[in-house]
Image: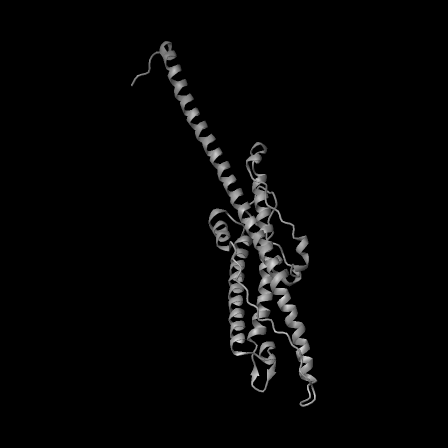
Length: 275
Protein backbone atom coordinates (compact mmCIF):
# COMPACT_ATOMS: atom_id res chain seq x y z
CA UNK A 1 0.00 0.00 0.00
CA UNK A 2 1.47 3.36 -1.03
CA UNK A 3 1.00 6.52 0.98
CA UNK A 4 -0.55 9.55 -0.68
CA UNK A 5 1.74 12.45 -1.48
CA UNK A 6 2.42 14.90 1.35
CA UNK A 7 -0.08 17.40 -0.08
CA UNK A 8 -2.84 14.79 0.45
CA UNK A 9 -1.89 13.78 4.01
CA UNK A 10 -4.33 16.29 5.41
CA UNK A 11 -7.12 13.85 4.64
CA UNK A 12 -5.58 11.44 7.17
CA UNK A 13 -5.58 13.95 10.05
CA UNK A 14 -9.31 13.63 10.87
CA UNK A 15 -9.05 9.84 10.62
CA UNK A 16 -6.03 9.65 12.93
CA UNK A 17 -7.60 12.12 15.34
CA UNK A 18 -10.80 10.13 15.51
CA UNK A 19 -8.89 6.88 16.11
CA UNK A 20 -6.74 8.45 18.84
CA UNK A 21 -9.81 10.05 20.40
CA UNK A 22 -11.68 6.77 20.37
CA UNK A 23 -8.73 4.99 21.99
CA UNK A 24 -8.28 7.63 24.68
CA UNK A 25 -12.02 7.70 25.29
CA UNK A 26 -12.18 3.93 25.68
CA UNK A 27 -9.16 3.91 28.00
CA UNK A 28 -10.64 6.74 30.09
CA UNK A 29 -13.98 4.97 30.34
CA UNK A 30 -12.27 1.77 31.45
CA UNK A 31 -10.18 3.67 33.98
CA UNK A 32 -13.23 5.43 35.42
CA UNK A 33 -15.15 2.16 35.58
CA UNK A 34 -12.22 0.43 37.30
CA UNK A 35 -11.84 3.29 39.76
CA UNK A 36 -15.54 3.27 40.59
CA UNK A 37 -15.49 -0.50 40.97
CA UNK A 38 -12.51 -0.23 43.29
CA UNK A 39 -14.33 2.34 45.42
CA UNK A 40 -17.51 0.28 45.45
CA UNK A 41 -15.54 -2.79 46.49
CA UNK A 42 -13.87 -0.79 49.24
CA UNK A 43 -17.22 0.51 50.46
CA UNK A 44 -18.64 -3.00 50.52
CA UNK A 45 -15.70 -4.21 52.56
CA UNK A 46 -16.04 -1.29 54.97
CA UNK A 47 -19.74 -2.09 55.45
CA UNK A 48 -19.00 -5.78 55.95
CA UNK A 49 -16.20 -5.10 58.43
CA UNK A 50 -18.49 -2.69 60.30
CA UNK A 51 -21.23 -5.33 60.49
CA UNK A 52 -18.76 -7.88 61.83
CA UNK A 53 -17.56 -5.33 64.39
CA UNK A 54 -21.13 -4.76 65.59
CA UNK A 55 -21.71 -8.53 65.88
CA UNK A 56 -18.53 -9.00 67.90
CA UNK A 57 -19.49 -6.23 70.32
CA UNK A 58 -23.00 -7.66 70.64
CA UNK A 59 -21.47 -10.98 71.72
CA UNK A 60 -19.37 -9.13 74.32
CA UNK A 61 -22.45 -7.39 75.69
CA UNK A 62 -24.44 -10.63 75.78
CA UNK A 63 -21.81 -12.53 77.76
CA UNK A 64 -21.28 -9.61 80.15
CA UNK A 65 -25.00 -9.87 80.93
CA UNK A 66 -24.81 -13.67 81.25
CA UNK A 67 -21.87 -13.36 83.63
CA UNK A 68 -23.56 -10.67 85.72
CA UNK A 69 -26.98 -12.34 85.95
CA UNK A 70 -26.12 -16.05 85.93
CA UNK A 71 -22.53 -17.25 85.97
CA UNK A 72 -20.98 -14.97 88.60
CA UNK A 73 -23.84 -15.38 91.13
CA UNK A 74 -23.64 -19.16 90.63
CA UNK A 75 -19.86 -19.23 91.06
CA UNK A 76 -19.83 -16.84 94.04
CA UNK A 77 -22.61 -18.68 95.87
CA UNK A 78 -20.94 -22.01 95.17
CA UNK A 79 -17.60 -20.77 96.56
CA UNK A 80 -19.26 -19.34 99.70
CA UNK A 81 -21.31 -22.45 100.38
CA UNK A 82 -18.38 -24.74 99.67
CA UNK A 83 -16.24 -22.87 102.19
CA UNK A 84 -19.05 -23.09 104.72
CA UNK A 85 -19.49 -26.83 104.10
CA UNK A 86 -15.74 -27.46 104.29
CA UNK A 87 -15.49 -25.80 107.71
CA UNK A 88 -18.50 -27.79 108.93
CA UNK A 89 -16.91 -31.06 107.76
CA UNK A 90 -13.66 -30.33 109.59
CA UNK A 91 -15.48 -29.41 112.80
CA UNK A 92 -18.08 -32.15 112.64
CA UNK A 93 -18.38 -34.29 115.79
CA UNK A 94 -20.66 -37.33 115.44
CA UNK A 95 -23.56 -37.23 117.87
CA UNK A 96 -22.68 -33.69 118.92
CA UNK A 97 -22.72 -31.43 115.87
CA UNK A 98 -26.10 -30.30 114.67
CA UNK A 99 -27.28 -30.03 111.05
CA UNK A 100 -25.64 -27.46 108.82
CA UNK A 101 -27.74 -25.35 106.47
CA UNK A 102 -26.08 -25.61 103.04
CA UNK A 103 -27.52 -24.09 99.86
CA UNK A 104 -27.16 -25.98 96.56
CA UNK A 105 -28.37 -24.06 93.50
CA UNK A 106 -29.84 -26.49 90.97
CA UNK A 107 -31.63 -23.96 88.77
CA UNK A 108 -31.11 -24.61 85.05
CA UNK A 109 -30.67 -22.04 82.27
CA UNK A 110 -31.11 -21.93 78.53
CA UNK A 111 -28.05 -21.75 76.30
CA UNK A 112 -27.38 -18.28 74.90
CA UNK A 113 -27.65 -17.88 71.13
CA UNK A 114 -25.06 -15.69 69.38
CA UNK A 115 -24.40 -14.55 65.78
CA UNK A 116 -21.05 -16.35 65.71
CA UNK A 117 -21.80 -18.24 62.47
CA UNK A 118 -22.67 -15.00 60.63
CA UNK A 119 -19.59 -13.35 62.10
CA UNK A 120 -17.42 -16.17 60.81
CA UNK A 121 -18.89 -15.89 57.31
CA UNK A 122 -18.01 -12.20 57.12
CA UNK A 123 -14.49 -12.55 58.52
CA UNK A 124 -13.61 -15.65 56.49
CA UNK A 125 -15.41 -14.86 53.23
CA UNK A 126 -16.46 -11.22 52.83
CA UNK A 127 -13.43 -9.22 53.93
CA UNK A 128 -9.66 -9.45 53.70
CA UNK A 129 -9.50 -9.70 57.47
CA UNK A 130 -6.28 -9.10 59.41
CA UNK A 131 -4.44 -12.17 60.68
CA UNK A 132 -5.38 -11.65 64.31
CA UNK A 133 -9.07 -11.27 63.49
CA UNK A 134 -9.06 -14.57 61.61
CA UNK A 135 -7.31 -16.31 64.51
CA UNK A 136 -9.48 -14.76 67.22
CA UNK A 137 -12.80 -15.50 65.51
CA UNK A 138 -11.78 -19.17 65.38
CA UNK A 139 -10.87 -19.10 69.08
CA UNK A 140 -14.16 -17.34 69.88
CA UNK A 141 -16.14 -19.99 68.00
CA UNK A 142 -14.50 -22.77 70.03
CA UNK A 143 -15.08 -20.81 73.24
CA UNK A 144 -18.80 -20.35 72.57
CA UNK A 145 -19.13 -24.02 71.68
CA UNK A 146 -17.47 -24.85 75.00
CA UNK A 147 -19.90 -22.61 76.88
CA UNK A 148 -22.85 -24.33 75.21
CA UNK A 149 -21.42 -27.73 76.17
CA UNK A 150 -20.84 -26.74 79.81
CA UNK A 151 -24.33 -25.23 80.12
CA UNK A 152 -25.84 -28.49 78.87
CA UNK A 153 -23.64 -30.57 81.19
CA UNK A 154 -24.59 -28.47 84.20
CA UNK A 155 -28.30 -28.63 83.31
CA UNK A 156 -28.06 -32.42 83.00
CA UNK A 157 -26.33 -32.70 86.40
CA UNK A 158 -28.94 -30.47 88.03
CA UNK A 159 -31.72 -32.62 86.58
CA UNK A 160 -29.95 -35.73 87.83
CA UNK A 161 -29.42 -34.29 91.31
CA UNK A 162 -33.05 -33.23 91.60
CA UNK A 163 -34.26 -36.64 90.50
CA UNK A 164 -31.91 -38.87 92.50
CA UNK A 165 -30.76 -36.56 95.27
CA UNK A 166 -27.31 -35.18 96.01
CA UNK A 167 -25.14 -34.84 99.11
CA UNK A 168 -22.71 -31.99 99.85
CA UNK A 169 -19.65 -34.16 99.19
CA UNK A 170 -20.89 -34.89 95.68
CA UNK A 171 -22.10 -31.37 94.96
CA UNK A 172 -18.98 -29.59 96.19
CA UNK A 173 -16.51 -32.22 94.96
CA UNK A 174 -15.06 -33.12 98.36
CA UNK A 175 -12.72 -36.09 98.63
CA UNK A 176 -14.13 -39.04 100.53
CA UNK A 177 -13.03 -42.63 101.13
CA UNK A 178 -14.67 -43.41 97.78
CA UNK A 179 -12.77 -40.70 95.92
CA UNK A 180 -14.05 -37.34 94.71
CA UNK A 181 -16.99 -36.61 92.42
CA UNK A 182 -15.96 -33.26 90.96
CA UNK A 183 -18.27 -33.20 87.97
CA UNK A 184 -20.35 -30.27 89.17
CA UNK A 185 -17.51 -28.18 90.60
CA UNK A 186 -15.47 -28.76 87.44
CA UNK A 187 -18.23 -27.83 85.01
CA UNK A 188 -19.03 -24.68 86.98
CA UNK A 189 -15.37 -23.64 87.00
CA UNK A 190 -15.11 -24.21 83.25
CA UNK A 191 -18.32 -22.30 82.61
CA UNK A 192 -16.99 -19.29 84.51
CA UNK A 193 -13.59 -19.42 82.76
CA UNK A 194 -15.04 -19.78 79.27
CA UNK A 195 -17.50 -16.95 79.86
CA UNK A 196 -14.57 -14.68 80.69
CA UNK A 197 -12.81 -15.91 77.55
CA UNK A 198 -15.85 -15.13 75.40
CA UNK A 199 -16.00 -11.59 76.80
CA UNK A 200 -12.30 -10.98 76.22
CA UNK A 201 -12.02 -12.47 72.73
CA UNK A 202 -15.22 -10.94 71.36
CA UNK A 203 -14.18 -7.50 72.59
CA UNK A 204 -10.66 -7.94 71.18
CA UNK A 205 -12.18 -8.97 67.85
CA UNK A 206 -14.56 -6.00 67.85
CA UNK A 207 -11.72 -3.58 68.60
CA UNK A 208 -9.54 -5.03 65.83
CA UNK A 209 -12.36 -4.97 63.26
CA UNK A 210 -13.20 -1.40 64.23
CA UNK A 211 -9.57 -0.35 63.67
CA UNK A 212 -9.55 -2.25 60.38
CA UNK A 213 -12.78 -0.64 59.14
CA UNK A 214 -11.56 2.84 60.08
CA UNK A 215 -8.30 2.14 58.24
CA UNK A 216 -10.24 1.22 55.10
CA UNK A 217 -12.44 4.28 55.44
CA UNK A 218 -9.35 6.49 55.58
CA UNK A 219 -8.41 5.25 52.09
CA UNK A 220 -11.54 6.75 50.56
CA UNK A 221 -11.38 10.21 48.93
CA UNK A 222 -12.97 12.82 51.18
CA UNK A 223 -16.00 13.24 48.92
CA UNK A 224 -16.67 9.48 49.13
CA UNK A 225 -16.44 9.19 52.91
CA UNK A 226 -20.08 10.25 53.31
CA UNK A 227 -21.11 7.03 51.55
CA UNK A 228 -19.38 4.92 54.19
CA UNK A 229 -21.11 4.07 57.48
CA UNK A 230 -20.12 5.46 60.84
CA UNK A 231 -17.94 2.71 62.26
CA UNK A 232 -19.42 0.96 65.29
CA UNK A 233 -17.91 1.64 68.68
CA UNK A 234 -18.80 0.23 72.09
CA UNK A 235 -18.58 1.52 75.65
CA UNK A 236 -18.46 -1.25 78.24
CA UNK A 237 -17.71 1.02 81.19
CA UNK A 238 -21.04 0.17 82.85
CA UNK A 239 -20.05 -3.48 82.82
CA UNK A 240 -16.42 -2.87 83.78
CA UNK A 241 -16.75 -5.01 86.90
CA UNK A 242 -17.61 -8.00 84.69
CA UNK A 243 -14.64 -7.60 82.35
CA UNK A 244 -11.97 -10.27 82.87
CA UNK A 245 -8.48 -9.44 84.09
CA UNK A 246 -6.52 -8.56 80.91
CA UNK A 247 -3.24 -9.77 82.43
CA UNK A 248 -4.57 -13.34 82.08
CA UNK A 249 -4.53 -12.84 78.31
CA UNK A 250 -1.28 -10.92 77.84
CA UNK A 251 0.11 -13.65 75.60
CA UNK A 252 -2.61 -12.90 73.06
CA UNK A 253 -1.40 -9.32 72.88
CA UNK A 254 2.19 -10.29 72.11
CA UNK A 255 1.82 -13.44 70.01
CA UNK A 256 -0.08 -11.55 67.31
CA UNK A 257 0.74 -8.37 65.45
CA UNK A 258 -0.73 -4.93 65.80
CA UNK A 259 -3.15 -3.43 63.27
CA UNK A 260 -2.13 -0.06 61.80
CA UNK A 261 -5.00 2.39 62.23
CA UNK A 262 -5.00 4.26 58.91
CA UNK A 263 -1.84 3.44 57.02
CA UNK A 264 -2.21 2.93 53.24
CA UNK A 265 -0.40 -0.36 53.80
CA UNK A 266 -3.48 -1.67 55.54
CA UNK A 267 -3.00 -5.25 54.36
CA UNK A 268 0.48 -5.61 55.77
CA UNK A 269 1.45 -6.55 59.29
CA UNK A 270 4.43 -5.74 61.44
CA UNK A 271 5.43 -8.37 63.98
CA UNK A 272 6.25 -6.99 67.40
CA UNK A 273 8.60 -8.53 69.92
CA UNK A 274 7.18 -9.66 73.22
CA UNK A 275 8.43 -7.64 76.16
